[in-house]
Length: 239
Image (cartoon, rainbow, N blue to C red):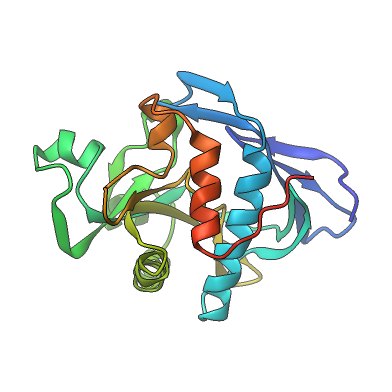
């Protein structure tokens, strides 16, 4: 499948049209950013690791009944995906309190949240991705109540699946964000699931195994992402 026109470029990925109007090529780049783009760096092989990591997780979720936009891997850093009408919404699940939640509510870092906490955020970097609720979503026309309900339901189902998935690799799924879009009347899981968009801690040591290594200057970012992949049984190709 040949890349044609670049239609969008984000902090770490770019999307290109193809000869099929319903399909796009999603390219994972080595760019890494934090704090709404205030900290930016290129990390060797990050695009390849995240592309293959994402495909592995998406294929696992698909096997469990979660429909996704992923069609297939095209190369080490490119995937073929369906072209979706995206909701401007991030769906966040927190199994433990950390990061912005602790700052916002003054709760203990690492606090176990039972049941898991679900939150909606508006996807808008300029506004700092503010916290929103169902009423905002419906009143501003970002989605219908039925669509909001389905996003919540699918996100929590993903949580049930991935908590155990990572637990088998001796990892704690602390929190993560998901995005959704519509394809021919059907809601699909979109964007990515990588250590860039979730928090993972080693179950025994609580070592951070995710993008917090970049945010907090802990080092060995890609080496740690690769270790997570290996624990999950993946074989990352860097050629």
